[in-house]
Length: 129
Image 1 (spheres, rainbow, N blue to C red):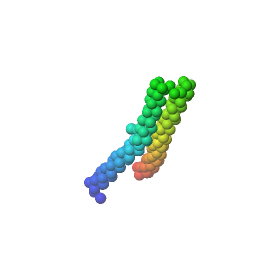
Image 2: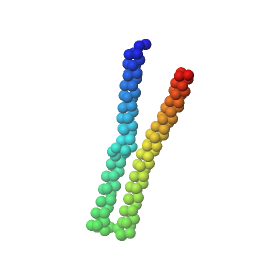
Image 3: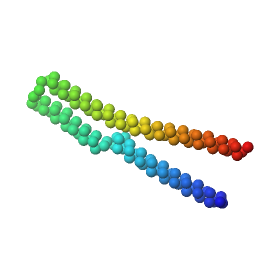
Image 4: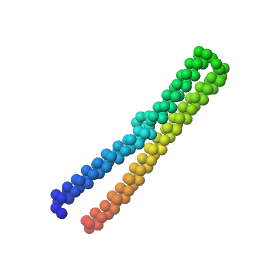
């Protein structure tokens, strides 16, 4: 093989690796977006809208008609806010789990590359001797 053929093969491999990187980056962006890293999912949006309607509706009804005693109204309001906090914690936990998985995968790949690099260095040292 000539030097030009080796260079063209290396260029082709580099282009293939770059394309694979871009594909993987888009796949990760899509996955993070589905979890809530970029924008809310449809389920999150629906839950938020329902929560806002419940809180505003309950508050309005309580101000106008006063159907329940004040303590019960406060307890219902605290219960609704507690449900919202639980929902937010759950969504945050899903996102954190995904971030941990990504970081763990990156660490595994880095360790693999480190071992390969050490092997290459040993081979180069043997060739230089």
